[in-house]
Length: 199
Image (cartoon, rainbow, N blue to C red; front, side, top):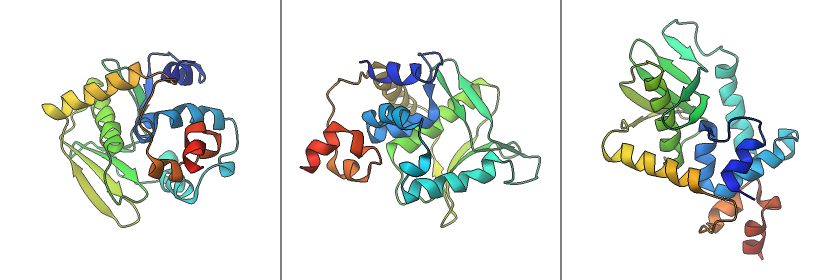
């Protein structure tokens, strides 16, 4: 069973396209992307933990277009990047200040997957003709902003390398599992790796 190719085909779309929303998940654990699509047919209340439910609620103002009535904000824009084969949505784009903003419920530490996600949004926006002069990740609960460097030079090379690794991954491929991540994973009940580490 092929990994990423299988997951994408289950949602009836071009198998070469990677969903931006799944980049952070993939970095957390490659198996979580596959397992997410198994769970997707069920009500989220059956498997979402508190922090995920809170995160979803935090995004509702974006999804319902109630964040702000100011015309400078573009909210929930669908984006596509042909160069890297990426598709998804952005949270916010400030047209006046040329700032891309990704909102998270609470940021305690920035992780590689979060950088990967906003960089994918950045490249998609740029390809679609939007100028992006800055990237921020906003932590809603404590109202903190984190400035993210633009993906230039080595950051761009690292981004491209990670996208290539994601494309090449297959479900049966070996990868080093992190027991701490397994303990926090909502899909651990279905994951043979997580179960074997808990014994």
